[in-house]
Image (cartoon, rainbow, N blue to C red; front, side):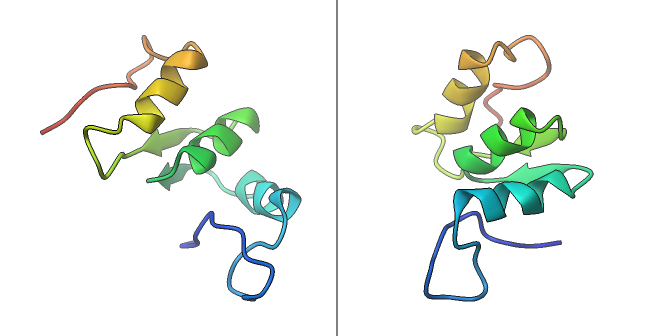
Amino acid sequence: MLFDTRLDGQDWRFAQTPGQLESMIRRLDVVVTTRMHGLVLALKNGIPALAVDPIAERRQSQRAGRSMGLAGRGCCRHVH
């Protein structure tokens, strides 16, 4: 299932509320995301997640993983 984690109350293709987005993520077996929100919501709901930061210098997903104590679990690595 491919979808965007951006909220948009005017476009039917996107979740309109955070609750709708979280409900969609809870139904998945695994999440691969380029957004920190996808990573956080997946992990909050016990869904395995792989976060890929498209901008290496930003490292937003890496910081989120570390703040949740996941640095030693195969996350938070910079890959060239």
